[in-house]
Image (cartoon, rainbow, N blue to C red; front, side, top):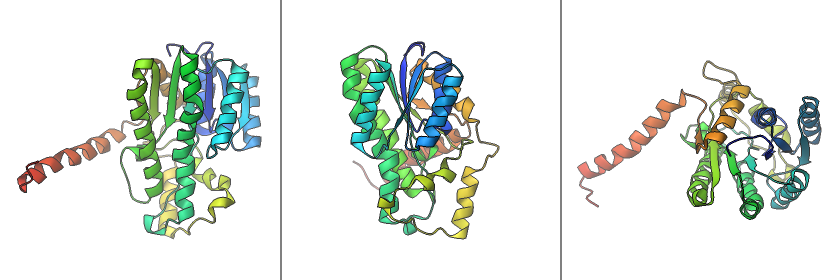
Length: 281
């Protein structure tokens, strides 16, 4: 996509946080948008705000954990926009706590939203994008936790690593078709994702495990702005620029670079350590 002007964009988790900031950025550049969110009231407010700013915006309530709901979103998006050029699989929740305390319901909840949600987005939209042709781009929101694993973020990291792998695989498979792929991997963004995640948890997953006081403090620290946090509107500008530039990775935090480099150095160093121990294969 060389421009947003006149293009149709679909954004899951679009009523707040990164999703809504990107919707505003895309529409200011001339895009028409369909926002999807599980919260009807928040969605209605977001669409109203965009329309008040002069944007062509629509809302569709969608639970990304359900394939049929995402397929309905695709039906509505093509009906309302005529053409869909950008699919942004952004909806997600956050979870923190020791892996030993994670319940089966916790695992299913995080993976259903944060990994199956993007997978459903691909299942519902990719066949239609292929048939449509023209300018097409698929995006995902992962996390720094999808590039470097960390303590107390087990289920979240598992899901977000999967999202990065999904984006990397799709990028290779779709390059020859002219379909761009990007994955956003932020550290701390000034949104209420962590604080708001629990309120949308379905009863199907049961009650979440109790957090220790120490872990709860870690969770609050993750949500609080720090010197390395980035304003969500700045992330939206970078995201839009990266789509136009067709970048696979979108990395808003320079502070992440050193940790990513150390991770891959540890992996690379293992080959030398194994060779030194006599492994010759």
